[in-house]
Each structure stands twice: as structure tokens, then as C-alpha cells.
Image 1 (cartoon, helix red, strand yellow):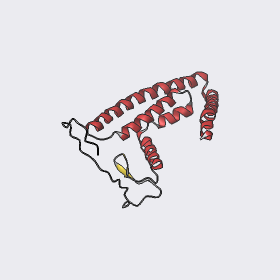
Image 2: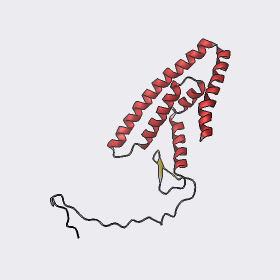
Image 3: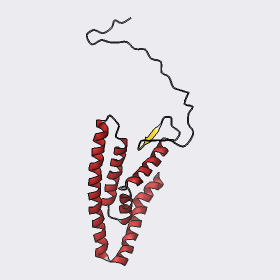
Image 4: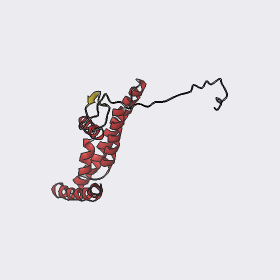
Length: 164
């Protein structure tokens, strides 16, 4: 984990600076700066449109009594894309724009679900299709059972049951 943080907080800015220098040499200062501002503006507009569409789909899913799992994942991707697109840099903009492409999000979501549920019991659904997580699976006939007792308490009783 510390290596990943080092790459994110030190490696990415170094790569961004190198890309700025290269782009400045090739295109010049002002076109490079204009490209950075343009990607932020275009990305913001795309995020707004896709975000509103995701909210609408989530509302429809909830109205139909379904959990809006796909829409929540889309919202997380759009939030991350927004942060990356508002961060100056060509590398972060590239990753941010990738997160705006729905087929890329579907592939990413499927891979993430497989990684998260690898070896866990149960079924995982991505875009309405069952995904079989890789790795060992438990015997489906072996079920965990919990033995419980209950006492029915009627609202009109008004008193606690007597103690034994």
C-alpha cells in the first residue's frame, strides 16, 4: 500500500510535469495551457450530463423496487472523473475521460466485482448478467443455519410478559 501512495503522490506529478514540458516544447505555452482549460470545461459538461442521466436511471430503478447498484458505481466513477479532470494534467485528464466512457466503466465494474467477490459465496450481477467470481467456491449444499426462538408481542398487550 505505501508503494501505491508513493506512486500516486510523487510519481503522477512528476509524469504530469514531464508531459507539460513535452507539450510546451511541441505546441507552445499558450496552446498547452488552453488544452488544459479546455479539457476541464469539456469534462465538466460531460460529467454534468452523465450525472443527471445516472440520477434519472437511479430514480427509475428505485421506483421499480430495484437497487440502483449500477448507477451508484457510475456516480462513483463520475465523481472520480471530475476530480481527475479538474486536476491540471494530461495523464489525469486521460484517466478522467476514460471513466466517462460507459463501456470502460462496465469492464472496470465487472473486474472490480470479480476481484471483490473472489471466493465468496453468493451470486454477483453486473448489468443484469450473472458474473461468476473466479477462485474457489463453497459447496452450495452446505448452508449455515441459525436456530432461534421468538415470542410474539402484541401491540395491544401493553404489558411485558411475566418473568419466569
